Image: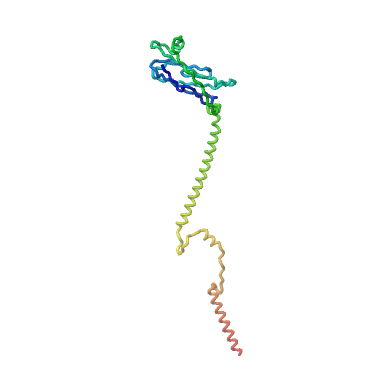
Length: 244
């Protein structure tokens, strides 16, 4: 008869150990006869083994969960002394009762086999134990929720600002397009600009000189000056001639 254990040397428990740590043990019946198995430990108050006994048919496998309970406050850490032992024996074909009664009977004349397993503990960072609030949510979640709310508020405000800038940009584009499409004045190559026109209209107009009902322009003033000059020259010449 052969019972194979996986693992067959060490039971490895991984931390943190302030909560229940679970490892798995597999039993495989590679023989040709039905077996009964039983699992014992040196620290029964610290471990929960499911199932801790049973029957195993030929070529079948049994999966066992071994759970290490957290160490109580004030208790001495004796984990290095913890060990397990797996016992197995052939079950007679005539036996029909349950496994508990099987192990209660006298098996001194039976060929009981056993294998010992050592416990190995892989320490890790202890898990933070956070109490639950009245709603069943952890207090640790509250700061995260507030942070998410602040981030959402900032994103919403930034989105509104971006939308406002986009609207202003669209309005400026529309104004430029309207400025380009505005009709030109007749006889003029420029585009009407109300701002420039208003500035021109606000400039003071130059006063014009009126003499004898005639508006003296620059050309008319020049002609009058030339005529007066000729008249004066002619009058002077006449007076000079008379005096001689």
